[in-house]
Image (cartoon, rainbow, N blue to C red):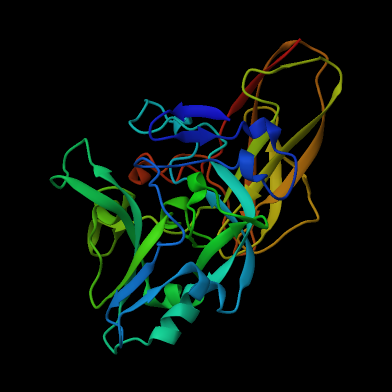
Length: 347
């Protein structure tokens, strides 16, 4: 793993090691805003409160008695590929590996909410982790806060998993033990780890990680306004070759990578080996699942002449959304899904 920050630990998978549909747990990227909390599973409880008919406390054993659900889902850090932005921006300098695909097992958040019962005015569901700390850069609240994000009630009822297993194994502390949220199709900032409290609200949640951080500028008829980051954008990334890799002239090289999107399937990946002047269609892997990445490959006939080449990958999904060539500046340092240049040397 590539260390991007030591404390709190932020670790990236070397994307060139991409080898299968599911990412091994020990290669899955780790993103933390605060130190990993120490949690005793015997005394841990999940509190559910707010606009519910009766507040309730759940133990892990209680949750395991509910019907279990297993779903595959790709998680990508909203700042993945930030190192490609020019000029350089603040934030963890992820390259390509702050993304992974796993099989998650747990209980549907909707099932938990239905068992508890909701009041008529319920609007959003706030997910709060046990991790906490002080924010360093203004604007910021005073003192320590918990990491928390919200999802709309409709999404909470149908599209959120409270996971206690990852690829068939119990969650490790770094990945949210004993319980984390998984929001298939959304960036990883919504997948709150070390869950300890769920609050159903009757108004929009305006917490720090919902508005000040993990938000972007949206333009519409009403003007320009900040909105929370939610769905992953369509994106293809090149795993091999790596940046500045040396490739033998006149040979055949298998270019590989992965592509993902939200609430759709990847239907096409194209590769350019000349900086975007021309494009060829790559072969898609057979394994696929909604809200999971799809592997792809292309056999490149490397030119016989030495020199430098820029490779680009471009994905299209079943909803007709294509990966853009240019960066949307209103996305700030997040949602980096434009075609990323991988420069190599032929010799």
